[in-house]
Length: 433
View 1 (tube, rainbow, N blue to C red):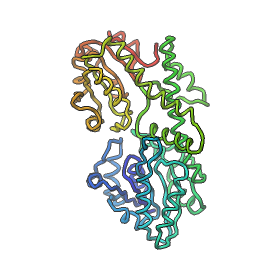
View 2: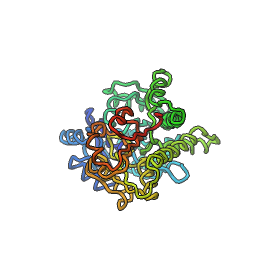
View 3: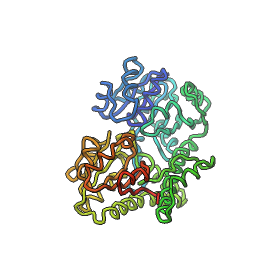
View 4: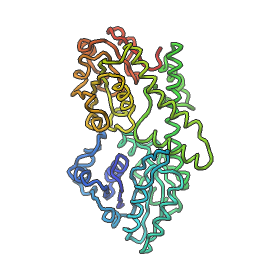
C-alpha cells in the first residue's frame, strides 16, 4: 500500500518507518527542512532505540522517502495519516491549528479516485468531523474521500516495539471500505483490532492516557502516606498490582509524570469535559497531585541537607523517562529551576538528553557533566530523577569518595535502601519509610 505520513515527530516518524518495514511504500512529510535533510541522510532527529537503523534499512530498500511537500506526499498515496503536534493552549484546550493547516493542504492535494485520511494525532472528540468538513469544502476536484481515526499508543523509549507488538489497535471508521483498508494495512501485526465509530476512537485515546496518569498520581499519594507511617510503597504497589483488576503497570511512585502526552492529554480531556458541562474533578486532582509531588521531593532534599543555599547537588537523569531524550514537561526542569532559585548549584548528567536540556534549562546555572562520576564530584547530594539502567551499575564506593557528603535522594526508588545504607549513604526515597 502507498502511504503518506504528514508530520515526522515521535509518532509520525515511528509510524512511517514501521509501516515501511512491513512492506509498504511510505513517504514522510515535515515542514522542517533541516529535519527532512537529516532523515534523508539516515539520521533520526530524536533518540528512540532501534529507529535510526530502521530508517537506513528502509530508505536503502526504496520503501521509505522524505519530503517537505504535502502535495508530493499525497499525490500517489492511497492513505494519508495526519500525525502533527497538538499542543495545549493556556486554557488547557487542545490547539488544533496544525491539524487544520495540514488538512487544508491535503484537501488541495487530492488526486486519486478515492483517498482515506486517517487522524493519528491526539485530538479531542469531534475533530474527525471538522477534518471531514474542511476537506469536503476544499475538495475542488470532487475526489471521493473518507476520514478515519487511528489513535497511537506508543511509549517513548520503546515506540518501535509498541507499534509492531501493540496491546491493541483501535480504528474509528464510518464505512466498511475504510475498515477494510485499515484491516489490510495492520494485517501483518498480531494484535486485537478494535473497530468503532470515529468519536469513540477519539475518546479512547484521551481516556486511556488520563487513566494511566490517574494511577501514577494515586500511587504517589499512597507514597506520601507510607512516608508518614513507615510503610513501603513498593510492597504496597506489588500487593495491589497482583490483583488482575488493577495491574502492576504505572504503580511506581516517583517525582511525577511528564512528557508530551500525559500533561497535555489530561488538560485536553478536562477541557473537553468542561465544554460539555462536565466537571472532571478526578482529573483535576490528578494534575494537582502531580505538581505537588515535585514539591514533596524538594522538601525531602531540603530536609536531607538542612539548608539549600550554596549546596551542590548532582542530578542524575534529565529526560522525563529513560530511553528517550525528550525534555517536554520533564519533572527535572521544575525541580532544578526551583533548586537554583534557592541558591543550589546543580551538576547534571543524562545519557541522552543533555543536548535538549541545554535548550530548556538555565544553562549558566547548571553544569552539564560528561558522565555520572563527573556529575557527583564535590556534591552534597545525588538527586536521582530518571531511572536509566546505567545508573544501576554505578560504582558506589567510587561515588562516595567523589562526593562531599554521602546523601542520595532517590526520586524513582531505583536503589535498595539496605544496600545504600550499608555502603554508608544517607538514603531517602519516595514512600519507603
